[in-house]
Amino acid sequence: MRRFIGKTAIVTGGASGIGLSTAKLLASEGATVVIAGRDERRGTAALAELSAIGGKPLFVQADISDEDAVRRLIGSVRTHAGRIDILINNAAMFYESDFLQETTDRWRAVFDTIVNGAYWCTREAALAMKEQGSGAIVNVSSINGVRALNRSSHYNSAKGALDQLTRCTAAELSPYGIRVNGVAPGFIDTGLSVVGGENELETEWFKQYYVRERKIPLARPGQSEEAAAVIAFLASDAASYVQGAIVPVDGGLSITF
Image (cartoon, rainbow, N blue to C red; front, side, top):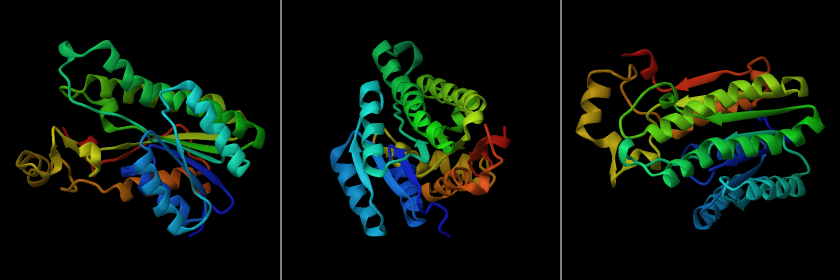
C-alpha cells in the first residue's frame, strides 16, 4: 500500500519505540516524515533509518514541552514540505514515583510533555491544516489513562487528560476537515518497558500474571510495529469516518479485570 503519497507527517518522540516504528511505516507508504525529539544522537540515527526507506525525511531537535520550540518545529516543517497533513503526538516521559514523594517540578514535567506538548503541537499544526481544509491527528495515549496504577499517578493523570484533549479537539476541529483520534497501547515492548534498569516484560511476575494466567487475553506483550499499524490506519483516508475514537492496542488487557 502507498496510502500517504504526497502527504507530510510529523511524529513527536519519533526517534525510538512506537514513534520510530510509526515514522518508518508512514515513510514506507510515501509520506514525507518529520521526526521531532530532544536527543540529537538518537534523532540522527533514526533519520538515517528513514533516509534508507526513501523520501525526504527530516529530524528537528525540539523539546515539545517548550511552547516556543513547538512553534519553531511547525515552522521548520512548513518550510521543509510546504504543508502538514498528519500529526502524531507520541512524545511522553515516565518514571516510577510514590504519590506522596512526588515533586511539583517533576509532576509538571510529565504534564508539559504529554499534555501541554500535545496541545501546542495540535494547535499549531491545526492552524496549517485549517488552511488546507484537511488533516489527521493521532494522539498516542495509554490504557493507563482510564486505569489506576501504583507509583504512576503523574503518567496516568496526564494520559487521561490527553484522552479528553482528543475528544474535545475532535469536536472543535471537525468543521475544518481535521480528524483527531487516539490509540491506547497496553504493554508494548519499547524503551519505556525498562523501569529501574529492568525490562518489566521479561520479569517472572509479568510472565506469570499477564501471560500464563492470561490477564492479557492474547498472552504476550505487543510490538511497536503493531501499535504503529493502528496509528497509520487512523491517519489514513481509510479512517475517514472515525472521529474522536481512542482505540485500545493492548492484546485485550482492558477488557479483563
